[in-house]
Length: 315
Image (cartoon, rainbow, N blue to C red):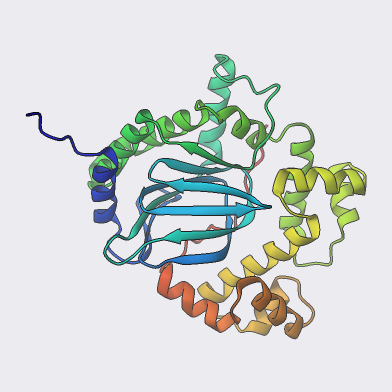
């Protein structure tokens, strides 16, 4: 009788568990890479992911954006091309914690891989629609590079020698996959996608100041109605909703990291009225600022310091 072979996901979960011994984010020696260990069931949690990929080794998560559901679990990964706020839920328990790899894209390395793919005609992006959020099935090639990456992370010398090459291979597998052309179309910021992304860069630099939708549309070189339509198609929300969400998520991180008062943070992210900020914060996150900070410290642990960084532009 043939012995049963171990499921690939079981090995990934074993390796990930060793690298994520504590609940919350466990930072890794590769820049932009961290492992999340979560032992709670979460419902309707507002999140704002930066460009990158989430690969679940054990458990399951779902993202909801403008009525669309994106599953990322042991069989599917989530790729994010531009910073986009959405709602998330996940299933986990202390007996079977959720274990997930969070990898923020290194835009310089990403640009190199995309350039090579386009040079060799490996992906036809000319007719591809830009997609900001993509859920794609994990194939054996991605499972293999994940196993080798998680194995290398167990050893400082293997991480130092092999880490960059393994990241490059993982980028290649993702970008050459079934929906890679849609990701590339968004990441390379061409056409109307590029115009919207340029306006987001302007927003990032000026979000603490009063800013109107007409300002953003003008910076994108588009009429206000056209800007509204393309913005919603790309990001799943109106420009006004996006601005508010970005300010509130930035405030959430500042409160958790720096210990500033609510009034100081409200002013930092562009609110004139602290009471208005407090109302909108509770409406968005379902908790007061102090309650949310306690929840973050309990469930997320150490937060990445460059989480709010906007993506670089591809030239």
